[in-house]
Image (cartoon, rainbow, N blue to C red):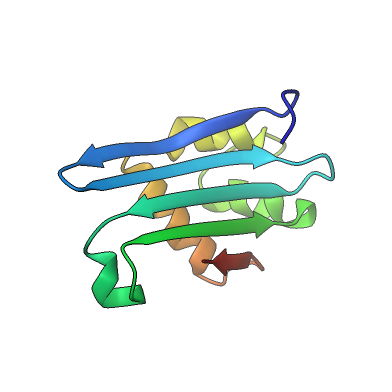
Length: 110
């Protein structure tokens, strides 16, 4: 990712033995990327490892639907909407929306 791409932090949490991060950016083609990195012993029971990375990609043609679901104004900048509505605890709502199937989202977990 080059320096000219605007990236916002939606989550940066630290607790005993755990860390959770979530970032968002729009690539040169206009797709939204919401990338996460989690280190948490509780993940072991779910995925068999204590560390995971997730990558959600929303194609440009679905950004208006995302903005609407999040309560943003039509034509708003998606990163502005995410920054206003989806930081901290709001980032969990964003992930629920991205995983809901309301519109197509490519999801990769490793």
